[in-house]
Amino acid sequence: MTMRMAFSPCPNDTFVFDAMVHGRIPGTPPVEVDFADVDVTNGAAERGEYDLVKVSYAALPWLLDQYTLLPCGGALGRGCGPLVLTRGSDSVAGKVVAVPGDRTTAYLLFRLWSADEPPAEVVVRPFHEIMPAVAAGEIDAGLVIHEARFTYQRYGLHSAKDLGDWWESTTGLPIPLGAILARKDLASRVGITPAEAARLVRASVEAAWADPSLSREYVLAHAQEMEDDVVDQHIGLYVNEFTRDLGDDGYAAVDALLGRAAEAGLVPRVTIPRLASV
Image (cartoon, rainbow, N blue to C red; front, side):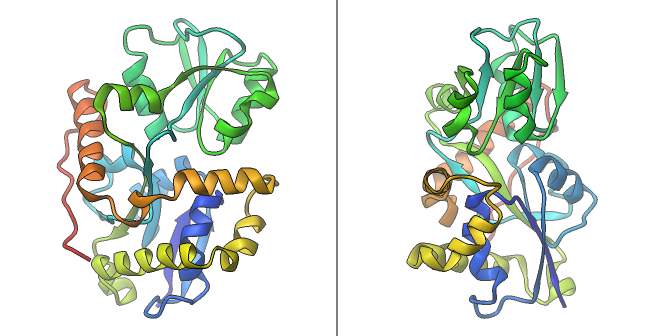
């Protein structure tokens, strides 16, 4: 049976999953991939559309009834947080702000950070549209993710706040961005358990590190016209030790993010179960 997967076309995801998708990890079922921004995959996961899917950690409270969090393959780290961009102001109070999705980790961090001085209006836009809209004066500020942290200066924009730095200085923990989930009924759907899926994902991560040249064509084919140096920076930042294994610090970061958000009334309270050792 074919395993339906969904993740973004960003270099970190294509780098991580290249070996799985192209049959270089023994035991992987045949794979069908859909590429989509995370706000799209968050909604698709809530409808149970995929067997293996990349979502925002902020969306987990609505997904854990159907899915199991895998301890590998995702995006979590330090110095990699979302940025609040403006044309010069350091404040978003009373402003119109574009965000890349209403259940993204970026937006959840933004809501925690801006609670005392909230914007007047929040609009959702695909992340690649946000910087041009801010630069053109269509909106006052934008919340950006991914490679935008390497390119926003080209639009003449100002980083009003690095929410990753804010989170790390507040908690001392890494920032949890994107999670990999497997359906709890994966065995009946494609013949492997979530724990077995985690072993395959981890093997794919390790294969990507062992010979990065093998994934290069796949990464560049989906990199949305990024320059090679931006692609390399992107992979170097978002594919790290937490991609191989969340570990105690990774799980603590997830618990802290969702715990703080629950206390603020922003998400339902949830306990994150750890998958048995893989």
